[in-house]
Amino acid sequence: MKTIDLFSGCGGLSLGFEWAGYTISQAVEFDKEIARSYIANHKDTEIIIDDIKNVDNNKIFKKGSAEVIIGGPPCQGFSMAGARIRDGFIDDPRNYLFKHYFNVVKEVMPKIFVIENVKGLLTMQNGKILAEIFKLFSNEKLLDGHKYFLHYKVVKAVEIGIPQKRERVIIIGSLDKDFDMEYLWNVATNEILKDKPHFFDRVTVRDAIGNLPSPTIDGKINNPAAITNYQEFLKTEDKYIYNHVKTNHTYKSIERIKKIACGENYTVLNEKINSVHSGAYGRLCWDEPSPTITTRFDTPAGGRFIHPTENRTITPREAARLQSFPDDFVFVGNRTTINKVIGNAVPPKIGYFLGVFVKGLLGRC
Image 1 (cartoon, rainbow, N blue to C red):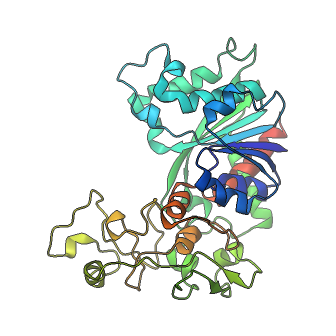
Image 2: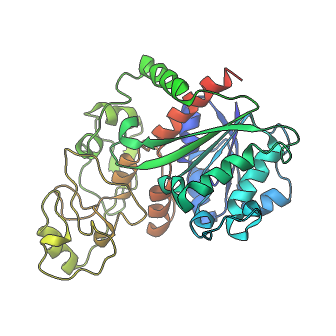
């Protein structure tokens, strides 16, 4: 099942589909520094490091190149759209990323496409943006007499056995054949449970990172023994795992962190904190899922990312565990790049579930 991943990032969605048996034949990523992590972990995939606009305009992909197209076109163009949706929605330059996603789908005509996006997409412009997306993909005049049947669902990471309160909207399109989203969702769930009975178990921060030792200067640590089912799922047979390096906080920040107990944040500090985040200087709790991992998980003022017991923010490896990346996935680049790719990634376990779901859908196409 050949698959193309557009807006691939480091490849969390790709990895999940690979787990489900797909071949990611090609991937597109604009940022060459981010692409380094994709290349390091997906050695059999052709990675195209270029603007999606150029990929579209140069007709890189041909009809039948893949059965499935996956990806999450960034939604800045949607969120910046005016109050009135004009007839030229697809031609609005602010929506060019989505336009080129559509054009690639139109060129390749895959049996299935998957769009991952922020939950807010559902309410942007009172739902008009979502309606325009559905209208576009079902327009037979634009698709040479064909149309896609679309359905969407809000996916909660905690319900997929991920220790994180992340929510995303998933839109799935099927070429020329309608489908029952809820029925196939249940089919995929039951299919996974046959081989992975603990896949959907509720997972806490402790279940995810509790067996990791203190960070090291270079981020390299001996591979710890798995204690929980979740750790077992993500474990590697390699001798070492990487990216377990802590941020060097200022003395002032550390003194603040020391005053924060589990579940508390900056509001317990008797001082003004300059942060736009309501969870600034928040400490994680062992027995709860984490909040959504963002690109600022190494910054105390960036949200609730302080380790449950140690006076530091979580490391990239801990953030990766909370995102369901396996321990043999290595992130490449400087600190800013690594934080960005982890925070923006689709959790691989969600990718795996979607891969199983799409496999069931393909069986009915």
